[in-house]
Picture 1 (spheres, one colour):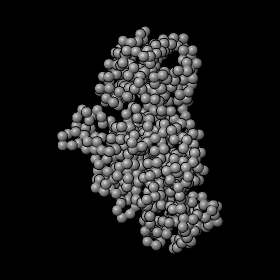
Picture 2 (picture 1 turned 90 degrees about the vertical axis):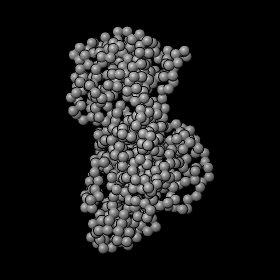
Picture 3 (picture 1 turned 45 degrees about the horizontal axis):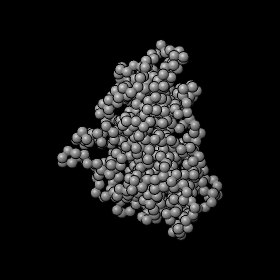
Picture 4 (picture 1 turned 135 degrees about the vertical axis):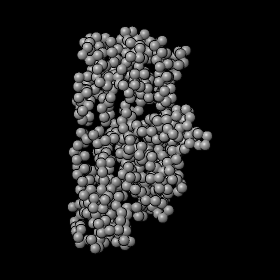
Length: 598
């Protein structure tokens, strides 16, 4: 309480106060004789940013493992650190999501009265005088508190009294849980406990490679083959940002990849977790995806809104949902997708979850029923957006606004001599994968501060590469900003965490997907940039000399070496070098080049 206010003025990542709250204090509480293995002890000072109301919770795992639903015991600290409250509390997220804030508050107050009729909660205050904040999320905690003991700063009792108070509250909590889980005539309590969704547990880093192997096996058993490490690359791209574009010529399996990848994780069209939305050429505004108000004043949801509503239901919020926008550039992406792109940039941590601003304007919600169902609807953290695109005379190019916010995976190099293989005993693991929760794909980092301390050397090394590349791109106004820098760093960090590819190969994918799509034009400056990037991509291991000045007139000595998709051995970033060779050839033969020319 003495240090928190000043700590909020300091850096969040790696702060000693965070370690105290997340590790030391929970460990101290777990050794108390009345806190046994059935309890989960968890402390939070925020995730990514300092919390307004820090908390330290004790949860009985028989009814809940998260502060977002169910009942639990929690210490709540006032925003100004004037007091800390030992409370018997109830989760607030589920009622507000289902009923809206006004009706949710009414529900919590009614349930408080029902709980007070059941519980003794001796020596605890049962009024509504708990004061955590003047406004904001802390008000939710105030309303959801059933009873509390207040300790004022400067007048906190000794450890003996604190422990005695906690033991008394835990005893009441134990009696409540045992009555709630036992068969009884009290259908209200039984129904509450029965509806509690399970806590999503993150996977261990060492499990990821094995899961990706199972996904690849599932795809091969369906008779489909993709280039080496494409599945790992697709996974890392989704993990870094939940919006990925699959580009390439028609018939290369772009849509099929999304469907099979989702299917391997238990997300199918039948259970509603995979949705294919064909984009129409006449789409001109977000209403085609999100919805509109009809002549009767009712909101008619679009296909994306319907998925978002389903995905945020408490029973679904840990399941992964995939939306595939098929041929998304048949219409101008910026026209119909702009609202989603903007809201995607508002992602922030709130009580351990990724939340965004609301997507649906209140002006579109004409009735109380609309407000209840769609009010406050953002992009759920368990929804992943993938667009497939073809580049031809019927489609539209992408702006840098779109490219900044997505990774672009290309499907242009095809080996037709791939044939279905015989079925093997690799089928084991399908059931296991179907039970994976969304944390397998959800981002762990939203800002570089979230990951900088443990991966500082990798971040600095990656940023150094981007600085050199940016110096080249700046000449044609194609350089990148912090958003792309962070996304590339996240990709590289995940790759290192999970041990999927070596660092040079991983950066090759990022150069190909995040930087080269920005390059197009007909000027000699574009040629110079491509040659400079080619020199960077080839490296020093091939013996190939890239003399930029001598190649400005004729770059054929470079691109002929990649004839037929072959790559000379020893190239540092072979995929990017092959793509740039193709772009140089197009520039020389057609007088114009672009990443998107197929």
